Length: 229
Length: 229
DNA sequence: TAAAAACAGTGATACAGATCACATTGTTGA
DNA sequence: TCAACAATGTGATCTGTATCACTGTTTTTA
Image: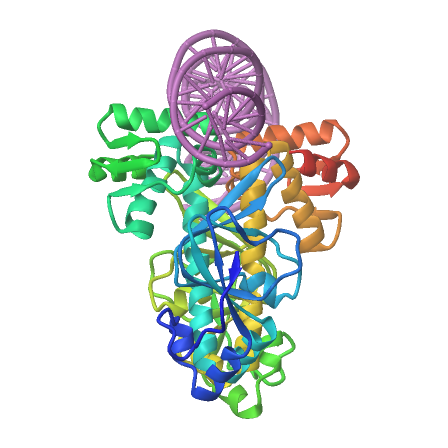
């Protein structure tokens, strides 16, 4: 974790849709209440239970959002930039309700919650973009919840692989950013079951697998498995 | 389902926090793009896959939000008024992504999505309230997801009973608004398992149970079961 | 670079809940 | 008010995945 020199929000190459609609005066507010920080793999961006540090805007990299449950940690989502993270906690002005951890080198801007709220109040378009974000999250969370609870482990692991390939990497070949244990926490299963499922997929020629190195060989079949559980 | 005569938003006794912050001109917009409808038990307020009918403001009654999964229906939440429902779908201008059904006689105001969006753009405080709502939803959905996937059926059913008593009815004695099948869809279990769990709770003196008539007799113990799964 | 710690694979076993099949009770409307 | 259907309860059985125990491998760090 390393603080960077002040960045220029106006010329920032990672501007969010929400920030695009701000006028110069509003950008000035943002500019002066925003600090850029770099996190390395496995460094925590939010720590569960700690006082919040502002809204986080993830500019580059990859992060996991996770939370301690009664039995174990659970990965709620894996988030690719550009994306705001931590609105619920920050806006409620509470302690962090969940943890966020970098899965690779990740650039983040922290925006003080006061100024974030000020922007919402000042600029309806900005608020509208934030609302769109939250709504989108809600819908995908509904889907995820249903899929996780109604599919068998084959379907859940297939989902996770397709998600990584399609949503995160945009490539059928990728380096799995989660270890087997985390992958278990992501698909509501245990490490051993994930291992067995991946081995089965490899044996059936659906994927090639070498440690974290993954390639989807038969997406049609994986999608079918995803549908049928 | 029955359309009522035009209501007066300004003097409405069920005004939401969000609507409280509107000025007269904005209330006038709302007034003219808002229709009040009553639904009886089991009538659908939103039908999954249908074109949306605007944001729904639930003024009184009780509703379930549910969605078809690969294997069965799933109840995502049970919502008590006052509450906006259906923002994600409406704002995305898509088909309804989930269904909403009345569990008892329920009064709803439908607000056209255009005017709802206009209010967000015009009034930062309104937008802010909506954002607070969405954030709160997200946090409770995270909790629910973790509880549902990590607890055994005893803990999940205990959670549901405590939720009904504490959040919905504010009373340890209530008429369960969900039948055994729905209760199963709510706690990610099957009808038979719910029945068995409730019987066990009754035998152990934790609840009294007579059809839909429920009374929590030992909340301390139910909370303990909820914690330990 | 050796020792320790984290990560990954695999077989044997246990068990929570699903599923099935059927009996009983409650509800509805012709 | 009786037939038809929906909802509920209950025992017997099946099964997917967790758990346990152990081995092998990779990564970290002292």
